[in-house]
Each structure stands twice: as structure tokens, then as C-alpha cells.
Amino acid sequence: MGRPQKELPPDGSPVTLFAFWLRDLRRTAGLTFDQLSRHTGYGRTTMTDALRGDSHPTLPVTMAIVGACGGDIDKWGAFWAEVHRALDKDAVPGTVIVSPPPWTPSIAGGAHGELCPSGCARTDPHGWYTESVETRLRLDTVTPEAVERRVIVATCDGLAEIPVAFSVPRRTDDEADGHGLEVSVLDGGRLDLPEHPYESFFQQRLILPTPLRTGARHTYTLRLRIPQDQPMAPHFVHVPLTRSERFSLRVRFAPGRPPLSVWQLSRVPTAVIYQRAPGTSLLRPDRQGTVAVEFDAMRVGYGYGLCWQDGPAPAAPEPEVPPGY
Image (cartoon, rainbow, N blue to C red; front, side, top):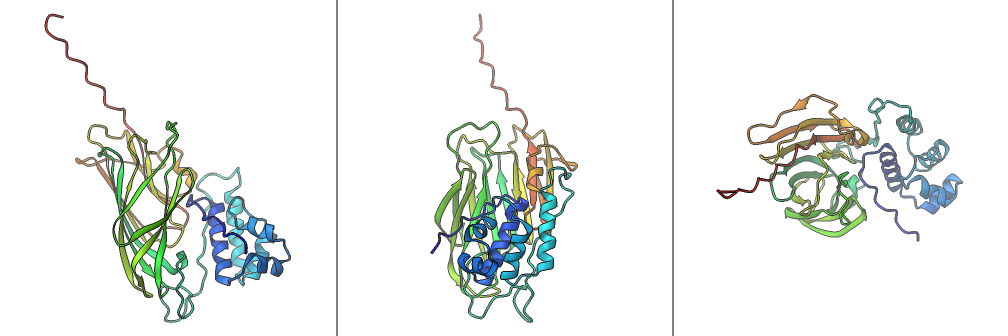
């Protein structure tokens, strides 16, 4: 039995997005890599490479996998072409829109359009979706701290745990050896199986208090903290890799160090997040130093949130000179 593939980092790139849904198609079909190899005529290594997420697989390999898994050849062909165009080095950033699945048909009378067999107790992302995310980020504290309140909806009976993952990119001027993120649960479950497979990627499993039935909602709250003295990249962005219906973000900046500029990111590819230049009109913090934004109808794999340019650090006070000097 082969080792399971590593989880894909939620970086929002077209290649990662394509591999995510191709993996989901294989899991839905219930085929092992050996079975997939026999059905397609390609070697097992070719199959694992196609779903690894390191590069975009060729069209023939993709179509062979889709055909073996019973997917829609025409729609997957169009999806492959969109990703191929998005990877064109001559393409203008932001002009190519990748529209991923789900393409799974709804069951008449079924829950939330998910196709799940009777008695299904799957715990992967296909067994739930995110109804809302409310994030409050504090930059006026000793170290940056975010509190996230999330509401999920189960689409299968017996949902007992879900993955939670965060990407914490290193700031360009951060040359420290360590790079971390502190995650804790304030309510709604407990965390287990912490992993740090990449420097900027952190993932765990949230164990729910009780298994959920189809259609049941569950609320949980997480607290995220950047370790003290670790600088934070000047943005906070939600990049949904599965269905996510609403996202609200409120950022409070330090009163003694307001940002030079703040702007909104809405349905942007990952590369746009790191351009560090406003692509939309600037936003102005209120009297409390707060900026708030809300999003809905979000596209899977694209970024939504805020980006800013830090203001200058406050000058150190000059030492007092005793009289007579």
C-alpha cells in the first residue's frame, strides 16, 4: 500500500487548485493509484505526479484520469485549458479567470447539492462547507493576534473532524531562523495532529465535540498569534479551497503607527497579493484605527481580504538633557 500524498498548501495558485479537484475526483471514484494506472494505461508514477500539485499535468494524462474516474470530459477539458492559459507567462495578471468545480449533480431532495451515499461518514472537505468566517485582527497588541469565528455545515452524517490550515508567509525583511504560528481553540472543539510540512504552512485537525448529522451547523472559534518579535507580512487574506459563502474581516491598526495605505483585495490570484501596490481605491481607518470589509459569492482558489503598507516606526524619544549642560 503506497503512502498517502501530502496535503496541498492553500496557496490559491491555479496548479494547486487543479490538483485539489483532480484528487477529489479520484477520491469520489474510489480508485487507488494502482487501479487508476490499470484503467488509464499510464504508469503509477505518472498518476501520482499528475495529482502531486507541483506542475500542471498534460492534457492526455488529465483526460485519461477524468475518463477512468467517470468525470465530465468536456468540462474538465475546459477547466484544464483555463489553468493552462493562466500559467502563460505572457498573460496579463488577473485577466484569466479559473472557474473550478464543483460539478457534482445534486440529489433530488439532498442536502446542499452534495452527492453523498447513504450512511456516508466522510471527514474530508467534501463532507462539509463553510457558511461564514468572521475574523478580527489586532495589530495594536504586543504581537499580532486574530480571532476567527467560523460556522460550518455538515453535508454527510457522522462528520467528526475537519482540517484547519493556515499560510503565514515570511515578511521580506524577516531573516530570523524560526517561523511560527500559535493556534488555539477558544470554543467548539479541540486541535489534534499539528503539522508544519512547509515553512509557511501550518495544519491541524479540529475534533468536533460530537459528530454532526447532514445539514447541522457547528460554530468554532480559533485564536491565531504571531510569535513575539516575528514580523507579520502586511496582509490578511482568506483563500477558500472549498465552498465558503461569507467572509468578514476587521483589522485594528496600532494607534501610534497608522498604515501609509490600506486597500481591499477581492477575487485576486495569489500573485496579486504580493505585488504590494494598490489595485483598488484606498481605504481609510476610522477613529479607532479600524478597517472593515465583507465578501460573499467567493470563488474557490482566489484571495479576499486587506493589504497595507506599514507606516514608519515611531521615533525613539530623545534623552532629557539635565540643566547646566
